[in-house]
Amino acid sequence: MVDRKDANLKLLQEADDIQNKTIEAANRALKNVIDSEEMGIKTIEEQQIQGQQIDQVNSELESANSKLDKSQQLQNKFDAWAGNWLGFKKGRALRDASNEINQTVFKQFAHVKEIYEQEKYDSISRTWSPAGMVLCTDPSIPANDLFDPTIQTAESSWSIDYSLTSLDPEGWTYAYDFSTLNKNNSIGLSSPKWNSYVRRRKWRFTEKKNSSNDVTEAIRERNNARKAKVVSTSAATAEKIGYIPRGQQVSLVASGLASTNRTNRANDGQELDEDSQREFNKLQSKDKIIDEIVDKISSTVDNLGNLAKEMNQETRNHINKLDKTEELMQRANEKTTVVNSRLRHQLK
Image (cartoon, rainbow, N blue to C red; front, side, top):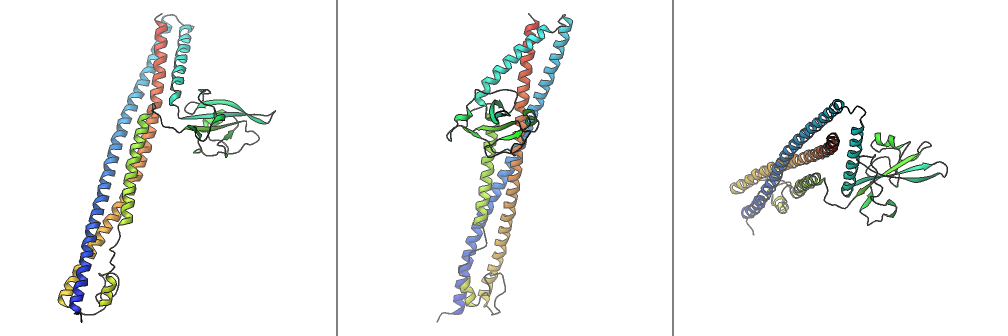
């Protein structure tokens, strides 16, 4: 017949081995989530530094635009001093500058990623007729030669963008005129009314190419990769970590060592010998250690979720700042073209 004391000690030692392995696994998991947390904090710090650098660039661009405005004011004074009161030279210079700017814009069509297709309603035929295509960034600039929306296929690089609100099933939004859509960021009505005479829909270039906006794309991709890595690590950790799987606790209950499935609860009232009681106390102590580790893991995983949200917000801020950078650079380039054109005509 098996001695009860020896049987109890054997079961307790086996449970102790399981707990030791569980503590080791939990500590490894805790280290992983802490490393992920540190990486997330460093990523946010890097994003904040990048944001400050972009702010500095935008500040310098705004200063450059202001100086170019002053240059044009000085050129106006020079025209008045030189007797060009009628503005013939200025007019010719502005026309030349406008042509140069338009040529630059059309050269940049290879980098265009979004475009509006426009149509007008013909009250006589009661049909919609094409009204050309324009740039999303500046609807006053036509882009009719960019592509033909009537021959697009599923394999085409251009596709209708349904991310906007108030769209019909074909992606159109309706309004009284295009000026109304321009003022409302191209948000109109999802269906035509009696006074809806124009409609517009957005097309997006889906194939990735090198463009003038590579900086924006690089930051987006880098931060998305970092965020995905942090989220995947935290999710995997959350799934794997739990309380100790103690398959042999049924045997412990049957042997009288415990009355429930947790060794840190009271036993069934049976007296244990001194050695068994000492081993049982060790199990209770390690149960508390495991609970503490699991609590730390849970708290760190929560922090990872907050960090992921903060990184996402920083990324959005970067995108907005970079959009502003691109706009300021475009304005500065156009003003520089005007100033140089006027200077050439003034020196003639």
